[in-house]
Length: 150
Image 1: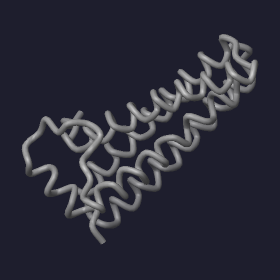
Image 2: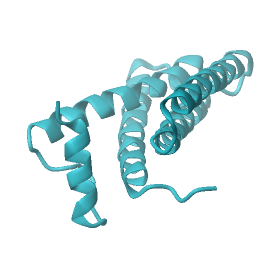
Image 3: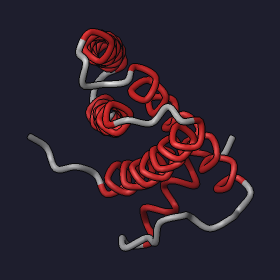
Image 4: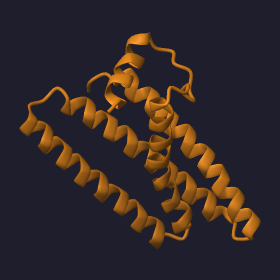
């Protein structure tokens, strides 16, 4: 297995932080509405782990695809997207069928990475600082800026 690129690690950590905060907010909303029980906690944990794992797999897929020819990269992206979609569907089906998970608490965290990426891209585009300190050298930040600018 190839080494995980520092940018993939950093961005996955940022998404994990967003998912953890979103999961805590989700718990609070369910609690305030009087709908909270242990299935909300287990569902949010399952959905959060799925969301972060899916984001990491996207990062690893991109890391692999940029070293391939255009045709190989297209196939890699297509296979990865299909596999990840099937995995998420299977997890949501399991959450719907098993009594240990709240389906809504499982599904909602799957939306958080998209929000996190959008907010982070907007902040980086406007020159605002990152939410997670950068422990890597400055070359990674220059690469990220080059990739995200239109």
